[in-house]
Length: 457
Image 1 (tube, helix red, strand yellow):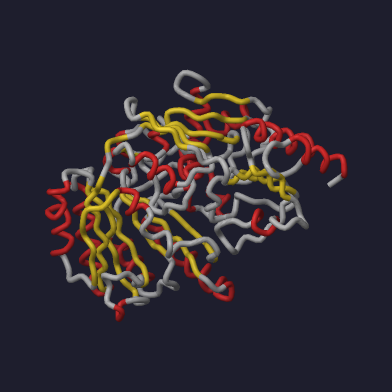
Image 2 (tube, rainbow, N blue to C red; image 1 turned 90 degrees about the horizontal axis):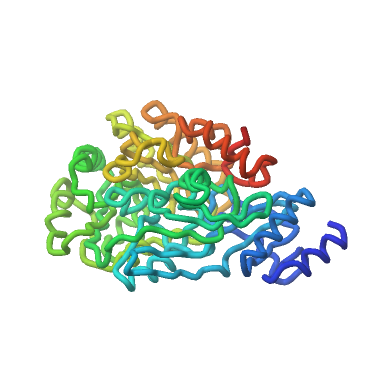
């Protein structure tokens, strides 16, 4: 990097600029996934929208790769880049709630824990993820599946508007009345179309919920899976839950002899009348003997943050995802086979239901096309020791391949890894061609390519 460029960087930004050799550099370049070890030319701590405009201009004019970091949770490490520019939004976390209009606006560095705590003060929530440290930005732009999705849809379905800096440096509003094609693309199309600096969401009445974490010995997994398959078809939409396979976690309600052993889990919450909560959960308590369980009323943000200590920054991460229309017996066989060998305490194999409100949105109404699918399986490998990388990556890949015969060709973009670029057209299905056209309109030179990349048409 020339001295003139360095001088430009130092003088043109309001936020802090961190470069190689400075004391903050190693912290500034790090992301959630410790497997990612990249060395950007500069990390810009965004202070305002003008910093984003300058960052886009800098990358465009000098040919730098440009990475955008919201929460930094991207499994492939898209929040950083070698020898390029990182726009880091970690200091932009303001949340403004309008309880009368049931809307909330949040800056791009906000995490779901921050967002949920702010909106919970008003008895409101919108569909988010299941880990509080996840950023709102990446989750929203990739679709957004969580506990509230059966009742209120995907996160992107609740995105009302966004402020976006596009590749030409323009600051644009994306809404139904301004640049509606851009809003359409942002609702599931990832970070391909610009830098979103703030998000405005439709909010819903959600206060305390009746939550449950049920842990079953693996020997009962088939019984639980078959029951889950049928029950989720007719369960009230206010009951948001998922099935998973884990090693038994170190939680107070699970006896010590089960910690580290392969288990099947059902995790979720009832958003209706708390008095109805015990009856909602009782069928899952009756279907098979539990090794341990916790069922009771709690604030919604508490459930959203329940696994944050287990899934923390600094683990090795490798992920895969698919969509499944029907949870066939063959798919259940694959889950049980690989569930016996979950390789670490943190690895999370989840089967999220995406029926209900998700399916009431047309497949071409947003960029998220798989509205006919009933489940979104994710295989999220997390572990401590880099020495286990080869074996655990192989386990994730083998598991994904075992599910493939029972799955759709595409999968949930938020759990695709760096080696999944070849699936990009399948992941967007019938919407890919329109996305490529919109990409050509707003980013014809593909400046925003550090992502699951949609090429300009």
